[in-house]
Length: 367
Image 1 (cartoon, rainbow, N blue to C red):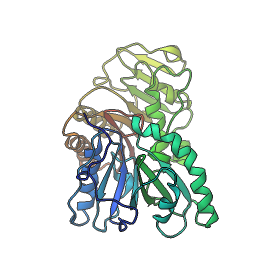
Image 2 (image 1 turned 120 degrees about the vertical axis):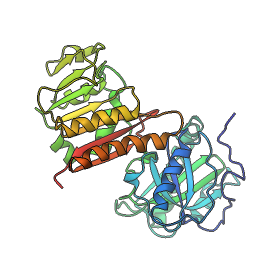
Image 3 (image 1 turned 180 degrees about the horizontal axis):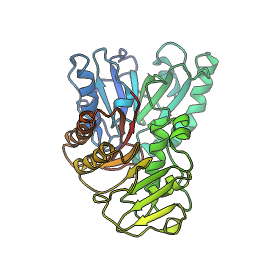
């Protein structure tokens, strides 16, 4: 049975006075995707220059991965599986539960910080530590402010103290302009009381993660039109309708709740792969349980035909060979659009509310 306990073979030797780890990064991810997260980051790093250090094994179901770099800087927005990236400083073994503060403060990188985030893995074991971090944070915050090192300035690096277990603290910093703006890399959503399914949270999170406030105002205007392929029972349709967007909901299954009778919803009982719109729409949204290659070909076809300008869709992942499956699906879209000379922007991410899937945002651009 796998546990979150560390072995000496699974991570670097640690100690309160271990040399700095400036050439390593800590990545948070969904539990069970540690290998994918590390493998993807290494691919991006190797595009810049060779990796010199031997990579440690990831810890299954730990919710994080550590990789050694060789001076590379990774673009967080390009990483699909990483929820957060942190430049490591030290791994501190906490010898006493009575005084955790002193060894952690002594281990911190020099300089000032714009925020202090105490974090735990997004696992059941990690959740058990969250009550401790809530109690511990005010103590650490007070000490840093006493030293004039914690300043409310969003331009300064964030200080992260990550507790993989109760006996270990990993310290590091993140660039506020090259990392997630959310603690633990998690953008939580509240379940709307009248939404017909929890899948609505996926699209709500995708909109907030992929589009800034200005883009949301510009691209999700009241009076726009959208099609939701595989719409039933209506979770994604609800998100569009709540913004005043008229939706054609395509699914052989029934729409439920308010989406079954909403004046902005036209429900067509058809196969989403065979549906053809009568005229061009602003948006395509799609959350269908299908092979990623089939969904990507469908989305690419919609853009080539000029049937939509923007899309958010999910790609369901296989149990194995996830990265090759993702690359095949995304490259299919790139190939189709490049062949037609279509300018576009595409971003993919495994969001907090995703499970065995990733979410993709695709939009036409002028250049």
